[in-house]
Amino acid sequence: MLCGIIINLKKRKMKKWFNDLFIQQILKSKKFWYAISSVIVPGIMSALGVDEQTATNLFIALLSLAGFQGIADFGKHAKKK
Image (tube, rainbow, N blue to C red; front, side):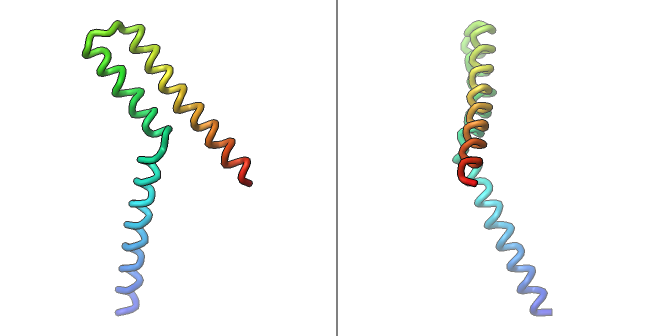
């Protein structure tokens, strides 16, 4: 009984540690921030009255940055192996 409780506590502790680590990795990711800004910045531009074409171009540019950052990260990981 006591052994089961200890194992359960360890599992919960590991899950919390993993979730904290995962959140930290996401917040440090350039791809994450490029993706977030690709949604937020054009919305702000539209609210400020900037024309639709400029907002669309910025959206595409920011999504491209996120995509190319993913390719760069893939190349970085492939080089390590």
